[in-house]
Image (cartoon, rainbow, N blue to C red; front, side, top):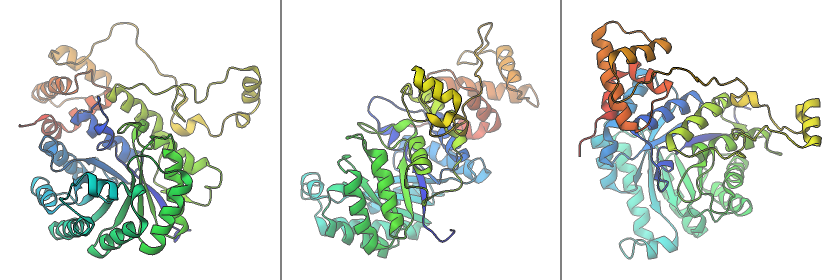
Length: 412
C-alpha cells in the first residue's frame, strides 16, 4: 500500500480564495486559516503572493510561525508568475521561502489574445524553465509549475511544456481548468494522456463555472493515480474562489472517502476531517459569507430530516439516509450562546474588560506590562479585522505577540 500513489491536498484559500471579487481576508484571518489547515493535516497552503508588498510582513511572519512549530507539518507555498523577475523578487522579500508555484498561460487563446505578441509558444516555455532554474538556485526545495488554461491547451503543447518543466527541475505540473470548462470525462482523459508521458505528480486546479469542480478534481486525481503518479488537488475552504469558486475542501475529502469506486485510492493519511466544522465556520465568519444550508457535510441541512419516510428511516438506522457520520466532521456538540452580560475586547477596550475576556479564555499574563502589550495588539487586531475577534484569534495574539505585531504592520 505504501508504494501506491496518493492524493494530497493543496489549499489555495489564501491565494485564489482571496481573489474572489468583493470579499477579502485580513492578514490575521489568513494566518488563522493556515493554522486550521495545519491542524487539519492539509499538505500545503498556497499562503499568498510573495511579490505583493502588502503581503510581505504577513508571509514572513507565517514562515517564522512554521519555524516555531505553530505550523508544524503544512508547507507554505507562494504563487508567482513564471518569470525570472518575480522569482528574484520573491526571494529578496522572503529569504526563507522554500516552496513556490510558478504560473504562466499555455493555451493558444491566452498566448495569442492575452500576451498579444509579447510571448509566443516557444518563449513561454523558455520563460518558465529559466524561472524554475533560478528558483532552485536561490533555495527553492519544491516547485510546482502552473499551466494556466491547461484545459484549453493543445495536448501536444501541454506535454511539451510539462516535460520542459520536469527537465528544469519542477516537482509537479499544475493542470489548471481556469475557465471550469472541463467535464469529469474530458479531464480524466487529458490528465491520463499527460501523466502517461510526463511521469510526474499532477496538480488539479479546477473552477466551478459549470458546477463540476468536485467531480473534475476527483476524476483528475484518479487519472493521475491510475498512471502511477501522485495527485495534488487544489481546494478552497467553503468553495470560495474567483467567479463560481474553486473545489470545496470538505467536499473533496468526503468524495475521496465515500465516493463510489474511490475506496482503492489513498487520500493523504494526515487529513483530519474532524476540523471540518471549525474551519468552515471560521472561514464563513472571516469572509462574511454564510455557509449554504445544503453545503455537503457542514451545511445546516446536511444532517437534517423532515419528511416522514426520511425521519423514520434515519431514526431507525442513520445509514438509511446518511452516507457518513456528523461526528466525523467535528459536529454534534451543543454550541452555547451567551444571552446575559457579555464583555468583549475591541479597539477601544480598557484593561479591566480586557482581563475579564482573557480570564474566561483561561489565559494568564506574567505581569501588567505583558497584559498591556497584548491589549494594545488586540486593539490593533480589531481595527485590522474590522469585526470582533474570535477566541482563537485572541489566544493567538497572546501566545505570539511579536508575530502578531508583524502581521498587523504594513508600510506602503
